[in-house]
Length: 355
Image (cartoon, rainbow, N blue to C red):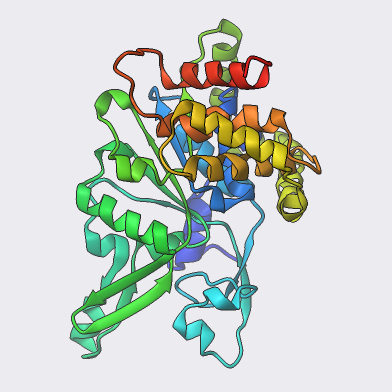
């Protein structure tokens, strides 16, 4: 088909370049593992990535979304409803006599810090209201993010009213909008990914607790890693398509691993001994509530599924413990040790025979 600049789809395709391959990211193993876990089991609750600027945080999120297999949606649905989940359909899809299907990429939606509430949740379609005299709903960013990723850079600087809004939607999995006589409900289930620099401010405790996993990223300190990062990024910038093609086989392997892990997840056995270890670890660390244990077990089970293991073991718990618990620890004014070091110390006491 000849190129036609008046066709938005062709224009977008012509200007879009291949994303940086997830498999090509150098180092940052904890971040990559947390994102893969969230891709296998979104019920883990999202990923918070804190650390230095320029360490590939946003690159990793977009690379993961491009890596995931396309998803089936109800054709023409503004919310990307899942035809295989009738209980989660929006009102329009649930009431349709017949539903045509389409295949689309997993969405990654950026939530800008300065976004208005109407842009996030949706608002009245002014054009149709003025031109046709009808009250129509224009979906917002939450609708676009359904079944995908909602990415917030500098999440620690997010305005309080948007934090409250996200807490409500994250808890219910549904966005409720009431504007100018319009009352709309639509599904809004997404993997919340936030990134930021801790030096620029702390995250509100209520939102911090909603993230299932919290990871720390640092600028590589060894010379070979730094050189390899520069080489790969430079090669990608000069020829995105060629670079992506060179990593296509590794990406396909990783994609198959994710698909297999999703299928295997429900079959991973979780024994009482592992549950006891998880509970003892959280008790030793003094985490509030039981969300720590739940997230720890879910994340470890997803990791076991990724690694092809039939049963959740202590090695899986140890691998994800810091990510699942470091943001849930109370501050101890008598202990200046960082949260990661406290978790490692508790793990050694619990798993190495001293507890």
